[in-house]
Image 1 (tube, one colour):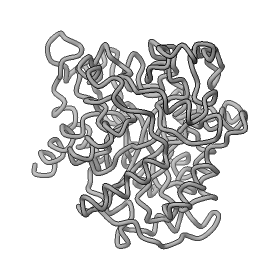
Image 2 (tube, helix red, strand yellow; image 1 turned 60 degrees about the horizontal axis):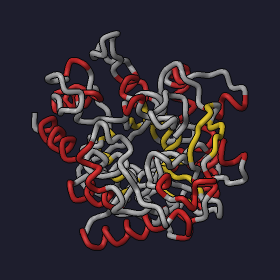
Image 3 (cartoon, one colour; image 1 turned 90 degrees about the vertical axis):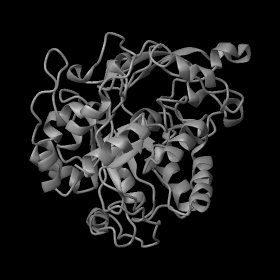
Length: 403
């Protein structure tokens, strides 16, 4: 995702979690009845007609609108319980019952493979610092205008990355997840697609995934364009159709516009803090901010090439100076009026990530009243939510649907 937000303790631009929290650069949206649809094989029309064609896929063909609502999306898998973007995390999210697994924040390797990491800098999510053979790869780069020091996927071949193992990204908040440090390797997106097929066969129902193009402007400048690589892999696996069980997201609207010309998948524009500008807007001189994009005119523009938005939860219900929820905005109604679904991000159970009025006790890493927070957000009419804790989200949805 982009780097409009604040930065983590590793010096990594933390698109979604300042100090581990969910603010800066952000996440998602979906719709539907209560049946998981199988990926159909209906091709959309080329060019600009694709957006209308995908909107017309109303679930009868098993498209994204056939998903349960509100849709529970496992954020980087079940990252509340396992190191994120590992098959351990993805598998647990499915086992818990997540409707969709966010399998793939996509970044490229030096030799052009797409792999799944939260950011191209991998010092905070792998054991690379313990590999003396890669000590000389540590460097400082400017990532979306921010100096970042560490190790970067684009400086490693896939074979080299496969010698590394994943570790917990926020161990101070989730010390229990460190039990699983070193257990899983970095998955490629191609491996994710094979896993998706295998799990669909085993479970007898379609498994959905929700990849994201990360820092596409940055990588395009390096000659590692993400969109063409993603489209090629999806086409190879027959998953580039309007009813394919793969929803694609990005914080950069031009990345989604590019994908609209390459594939027929449902597409989602991620929206971070209201005062932020997508990095592609910064580089091209587009003066619009996220605040402009969430106005009816901005939403109408997004709807011309995408099917949904993934706003930060703060765009749905702002917080006051104390971090407590205030009055919902009109974003849900405005987006629905434009024909867009909303998949906000990210719900987590720990006090430090919850609105102040749902925290319990004084331990920032203890669980707060997550159910109360879910109920409040679901009541706004959002179509789904990204959550690190799919099990909690599913119980909260059951409470909400059953009144």
